[in-house]
Length: 104
Image 1 (cartoon, rainbow, N blue to C red):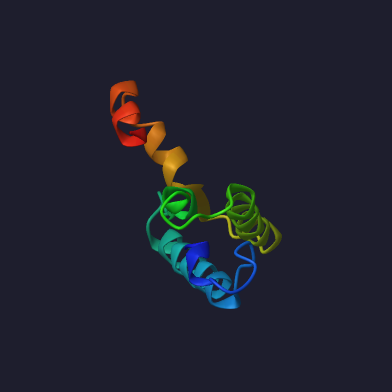
Image 2: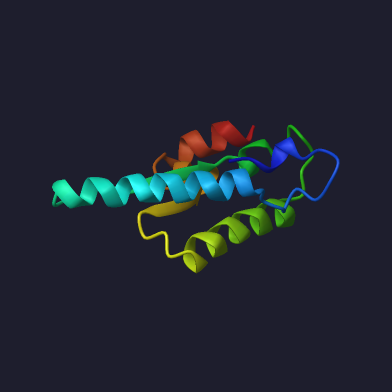
């Protein structure tokens, strides 16, 4: 999931293909839960903030895009789906020295 694909418009708008993909993945997870008691869930990494500098993106628009996807997940009751920002995910798993090297 990436807001970069909409170069001529509002990068914060999610399209129905993304929403339908979430719905299908959630349906698959629900099916798995029927025969596997531990179930399954999906974490989708949104890489918009990963490419902020490279593509001169506006962080508020990227964050709005992510919020809108999360709102869809909540509104549709997609209990097996989670959207996480790539940089947030990564920064919680790397050391401070690696973070500094990445910012150089």
